[in-house]
Length: 451
Image (cartoon, rainbow, N blue to C red; front, side, top):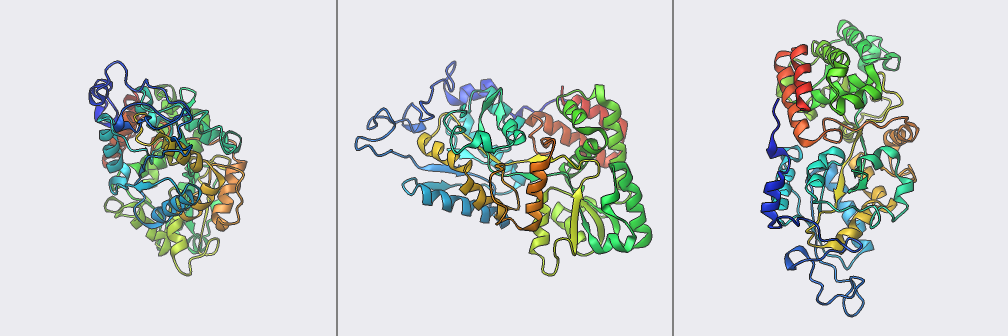
């Protein structure tokens, strides 16, 4: 399968768009404070060497932030974060500039266009890891190892998984704000009890099929709620099956492009997902994930695999309590894993407000920021030194599982484990799989996705 250049940043287009042929992004930032013309916030005419004005006060430019948290728990969480930042830095003017829709794709398109024009926002919500590869390859992001990651004890407080995806080529280029766990298997407690199924006894993904058959034999519920309207949920499901059946080492090898060397494991995971398909709700092709999740709320399905954002719907439902009406287990075979999806903020060169951006990223990595944001978002903090007091029973358990995890594999469906071009190819292959359920063909397409 051929790549799609529109999902990355073409260097020639980037340099042309920036108008900096041969020198794109080479202007260093002393402490990430930036230099340049008026357009990129580098007007140093009235600044001292330390970045302050003649009166010694830092001349902060307006901080423009772009994100896709425009409603629900995301809006509440980003509001709480920015309120805390304004309390700590009242002299920094913040301009939130949210971009809704497209499951984040609309924001990505807007940011890419602005970067190519040489006018990026101060920072933006981005999945870290290989998702940021085009920006690093084109010298668009700053190395913030010293200017940001040396603050607030971040290097010691962040666990290895979040730290690794915050780096590319050995340099920190972003600050993760939250962690969503992907290897969850949610279930309706009444349905599984009526079916005589114990979710904790399911030891590996292939055993889940028998449990779903038992559910459908003993109840009116389907075995698994699922949406197949868009491919990412099935790609995410396949990734958890691969982790549970073949382990982290094989998963990481596949994500590095060694699909052919691990073809048996790739095909086995696809075959298991195909078995699951017989136990999906019949309307899976017309639903989004929220609509599929309602089948757990209504007792119309036993199991639901999804990121832990699905739990926010359960918490909002009256008389639907954790461990009473709903519960979860790690996806079978992944007990000591914490499959990561994260949101982060990078530091672009050509920055319109370098000093304010540096302060914002330092704040994003602080305890205060993560204590404010994550309980409202339904995620956990990447720092391990934060109290569980504000997080409730489900997220508190997730925090314990995170601290006790032996591996923290990054998400493929959200681009942490793959470049944007590869992810597009994998989604295309998964879309074909959903339409024909051809294991061999899809395995070959997965292999070609990395080429």
